[in-house]
Structures are given as structure tokens and as C-alpha cells.
Length: 234
Image (cartoon, rainbow, N blue to C red; front, side):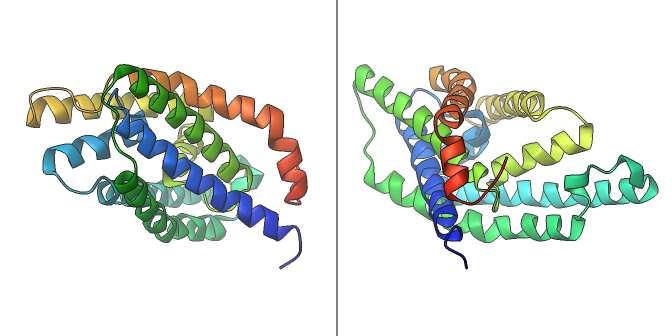
């Protein structure tokens, strides 16, 4: 391990911890959670199971979907090798990275359970807004830090990238569509099993628009410095 690997790993771990904290703050505000975790949150609320455990189950489904998508892409690019993007031609490594998301998710969701147990839910609306803002900021910073280190992606980000590769659309467009799908699925789960919406509200809308802006601002201010310290070039 060279000296530049140490800050890279530290940035990555810190990013994941900040991301886990941001997700839990989103759930604690009581104003609606971010779309990517809304399905797990609604099922957790209905079944009274641990939110962290439900998130791990959801992430496992994401990883399985990524594997299927990448295997399909591998077959497609064998038939038409000229269409394979350069960054996506090493599919064996890609599949290994997919599988490594499972142990990462297990550790990640354990920290979510810890944060959930430590952080109380605010009752006053003003405090709820502060917690929501903190959740959006932490989610954006954590996602940016972990993604910029190019190690193992969080399954929530990995599935969006996989779908983007499969349909040939931009990651931003795919992310918006995937968020909309999760919101619709969460609404259906809540209305069918609890007869009211669960996890969808002001916080959901704020997360859709806010997290992406936080990522963009953080990258504008710190991405070059962080990647240079980590020995990465963009």
C-alpha cells in the first residue's frame, strides 16, 4: 500500500459514514425520506423490522439486479464488441465489484442501525427542518466523497450506473427516473398495506433536488484537492 492509498481509503470510509448519517437524519426528520431508501423505510414501518436490515435487503436486490444487467451487457458486447465502452470492457472485474457491494452493504447498514439508535426524532417543525437540511447535506457530501474515491460503489449508486449503461442514457436522467420509480412504489406499498402514505413528503422532494446540488457544490469546492491527495486523476 503506497502513501496515497491511505488518504483514499480514509476519504472513502469517511464518505460512507457521513452518507449513513445523512440517510438516518433524513428518516428522523419525519418529513419524508429520500427516494432511494423510501421503499425500505416504508416496509420497515409497516413490518416493524429494523430499517437497517430492510435497507440491506433492498441493497442485496440492487446488487442482484446489477449482476443480471452486467451479464446481459457482457453478452451484448460479445456479439457487438465495438459497442463496448472502454471503461466497461473488463466485465470480470466489474462482477467482482458488484459482489463486493454485499459485504460493504452489511457494514454500512450496521452503522445506519447505530445512528438510528443514537439520534432522537425531533418533535418541533423547526428542528425537523434543521434535521432535514443536515440529512441532505450529509447525504450529498458522503455520496460525493465515496464515489470520488472510485473503490466500491454504494448499491444505490451502483444500480443507477448499471441501468444507465443498459439503456444508454445519462446517469442524471436515469437517477431521476429511478427516484420516480421508487417514489411510486413506496406510495403503492403505503396505500395498499397501511392505507396512507409512508415516508413520502416534503423531505422527499427536498432530497430529490437538494442532494444533487450538494454533490455538485462539494465537488466544485473540494473534488480536485481530494483526488489529488488520493493519487487519482480526473
